[in-house]
Length: 70
Picture 1 (cartoon, rainbow, N blue to C red):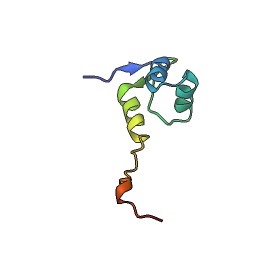
Picture 2: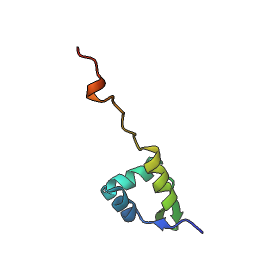
Picture 3: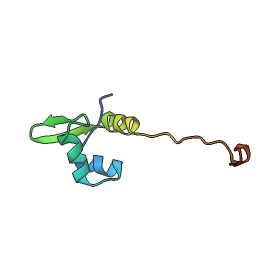
């Protein structure tokens, strides 16, 4: 099945950002996009890849009961 192509507005909504941020990602070539005539579309997989690449995992700290006193 082919990847669904999203508009800049749809990408901004999915990322929870403004349209300016989505357009900047395109302008700076930080996300994959497709030119359809004069329109710009972003594959769903590119949005998922962007989110995955920029996801920061939490640091696991030891429980307070196992820490040494200063």
